[in-house]
Image 1 (tube, one colour):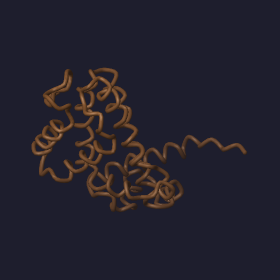
Image 2 (cartoon, helix red, strand yellow):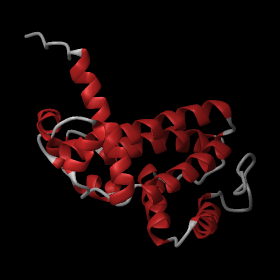
Image 3 (cartoon, helix red, strand yellow):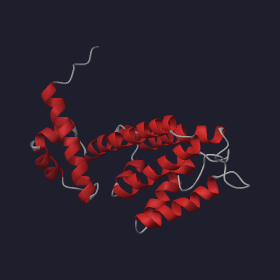
Image 4 (cartoon, one colour):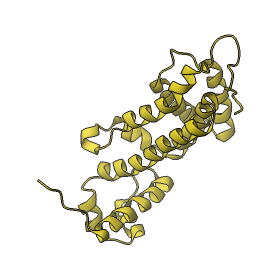
Length: 192
C-alpha cells in the first residue's frame, strides 16, 4: 500500500504549527494553550487537531525537532574537534537545552514512545553516544561512563542550577568526575 505524499499546504501548516509551538512552549511550558499555538501559527484549532490529534503528539513533534538538532550538533562537534573537547561542548549544549525546555523534556521522557510517536530517551542516548564513544576510545573519559549517565547528569545540572553561571560550575565539577583518574587526559579540558 502506497502512502500519499503530504500536500505542500498541509506540510506548510504543520511546520507553522511546530514553529509556533516551540515559541509558545518556550514562554509558557508544555501545558501552553493549544488555541494560542494555532493562533500564532495563523491556522484554526481544527487544523492543529488534524495534524496533532493530542497534546502529546504536538509535544513529540517539537521534541523530535529539538533532539534531532542536538544529535546533528553531536556529529558536527565530533568531526570538528578532538573527542574530549567535542564531548564538553556537546554537554554544554545539552545543559542549555535542558535549562530552556521549560519542562518539555521531562514530560516527554516519561511519555511512552508509542503514545507520543517519539522515543526521546533513545534519541538523547544516541546523540550522547556519538560524542562519548570517541572520547572513551581516545582515553579522555572513563570507560565506565554510559550515555545515559551523561543525559541524567545534564538534566540534573539543568534542574538544580539557579542560573547559567551555576550550571557551568556544576558542569565543570561533573566533568572532573568523568575524566580518567590521574589528571586531565589529553584533549579534555573542562574549560574547552
